[in-house]
Length: 231
Image 1 (cartoon, rainbow, N blue to C red):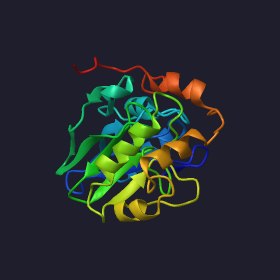
Image 2 (cartoon, rainbow, N blue to C red):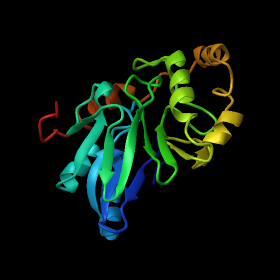
Image 3 (cartoon, helix red, strand yellow):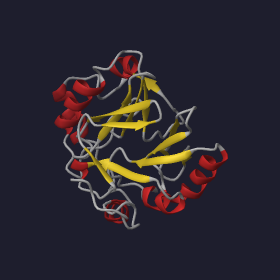
């Protein structure tokens, strides 16, 4: 599913047998759409999760919790944001017979994670790795060097044929592979020094939504977190 304003992809994953589902990187303006699709498919939304604390849109996790009672929100503990469940490195997110592994991939922000499903050969990379690109590193505790090391040590070490699904694309592309990005990514196929130089000279505009999105996303998208955070 796609938000054309922020070019954000939202991913719905479900177990075909017990109908439990998770939603990755929902956008608040599309929460009603997401609810409708989930109900039409006869699914039960177990978790609404984020790859990081976004700066270009407000998360839909809080609104989905109110629309679909029983759903819990998730985000990495290192993000500094609130959620029902705060994720640590190497945690497993289970839905039905499926599992996602939480891989820390900071650099775009301090709290970025990649969700990996080994059984399906797929990973959801958030903004750490985009198709032929990557997230910017000039705000929210970002670091070009940290991002380069995250991608090379965590994502590029996955099997070459793993399919990678990013949080955004601005050119209509939907999926890539580890092998493709290692060979053709114009930034991350370079040396560390070259990559740092590229990222330090992007001269990108200040994100227009950041002053609204980040404070909202710190509290689950402006919606009250209904339970205490887990220790």
